[in-house]
Amino acid sequence: MIEYVAYALAVFVVLTAVATALLRDVLAAIVLFGAYSLGMALLYTLLLAPDVGLTEAVIGAGVTTLLLLLTIARTVRPSGDRTAERVDPRALFACGALAVVFGLTLPGLPAVGDPNAPIVSYEAVTGYYLSNSYADTGVENTVTAVLAAYRGFDTFGEATVVFGAGVATLVVLRREVLT
Amino acid sequence: MSDRRPAAEDPRTYIESEVIMSAVRVVAPFVLTFGLFVTFHGADSPGGGFQGGALIGVVVLMLAFAFGIDPTRQWLGSWVVTAVAALGVAVFAAIGFGSVALGGGFLEYVRYPLETPTKLGIEAVEIGGIALIVAGVIVGLFFLTAAGPQEAEP
Image (cartoon, rainbow over all chains, first blue to last red; front, side, top):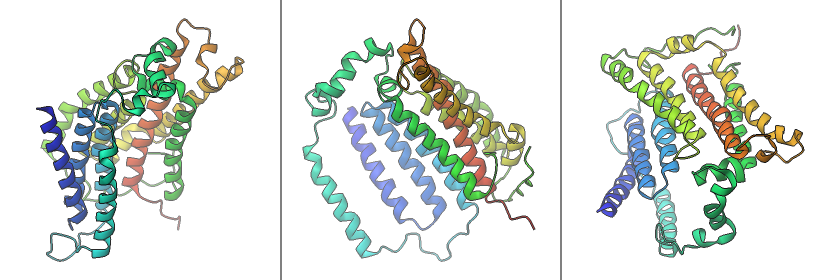
């Protein structure tokens, strides 16, 4: 039953992605892009990655949509009656070729949740985290343990990069405070 | 206090809508509670500082969306968002280098003389560091995008 929901979501995600690329009205494209992100968030959650699903729902469907809406409020609508963007055949070929190449690698991926998949069974990394993270850190969410303890230095770098992005925006807009 | 002039509210960016205001009034407390839960419970359930901080930031975005960006900006004050984001970096760095000062490595939580140093350290970094940075920067990016570039002084 649940796999049919996942297939339906996958079809939904592909359709919204293609429609986002083709629609000429930017407002409609942004709304569809939000729907695409929501579909991805549900899909991630179905694939047992709730941490990623939460992030996708908040950042992808929420914040990005709002920021894009704010941006197009400063632009004008394209003139003309056409609903869809003209498709450049070379761009279509490049996108199609990329999709085919990625699609060809799909059969090589292990099934979702396969306990014998290399990423799970490789004892030196994932296996170590899964068996020892609670004893080492006292934290039940292994993802948090990896992010804040085992890979804490990387996370510090990422957090400063997020802060740096805010500062860079200040510099570009020649402002002094984040409000 | 900032000396910049408040950006003129573009009529197209804000339309007072009773539907949106009522919806935000009902939903915002739940989103804020969920954000705080995800932040503070991130060590033992899905989520953590990043997701929770983003949710808390989104509450401000929702308020601004419903009640107008400039009133929300004035309600927050001019330097609060910057201070929150910078405080996050400072807290994370202090916890990281604190263990160095105690003779260990960067973020080596066990150097702290506490009962469960690693669990407390992880939660401090998630709540006091990452959540503050993410919430501050998201709110900041929103207000900056809305305000646009500072015009050169005449």
